[in-house]
Length: 257
Image (cartoon, rainbow, N blue to C red; front, side, top):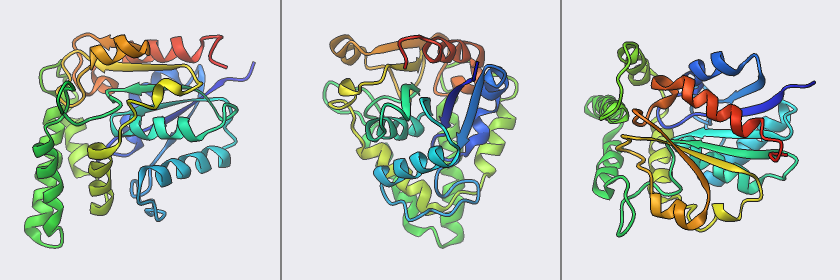
């Protein structure tokens, strides 16, 4: 029997190496394709200037790899991209959606918990002087701050410092980082994902400060969600066993076709 397909989409600031632990747990059971988004891993930006164009790029990569009936999985920013891919794809291309630490809207507003909009704006302002030494140093500090936020409040594994060092050191085009922040600040799938025809599962860390669970939203929409106990924003490093188990459950569900 042919293995089922998983397409993994990374988040802001780091390319597909973040999926190493997940791949190690699932590569014997699934055909896994990790897709580096435009501007990451020495890939040109492909002229992608918005979430729709990034999703088109992902769908093109899936076609080039011959992937059909795939479960698309996105972490953090990648969860927003995965939603857009699912919305644009035919059922024959995407048969399921899993998001990890990725709410349908990231910004705090009345009745909705999330990132402080002023904090996001401060992150974006870092890119106003990117052509100076000060600007480059500020980008590094931004990545360090974001990295610290990802683990805050949750379990901190022994290998986190090595992970953080690689995250901060990875060179990503400044325009790509800025575009990612713009998507985090503006993309809103709250009124859309309930209409997706594909089965979906949304996984959250218990202590996530970046992407907290909006429980009333899921109670109202009836969309499937699970909380990974003890995790913050980085369950793909800190709770990979639990994460892999939930991926297996949705991906092997006979209704996910």
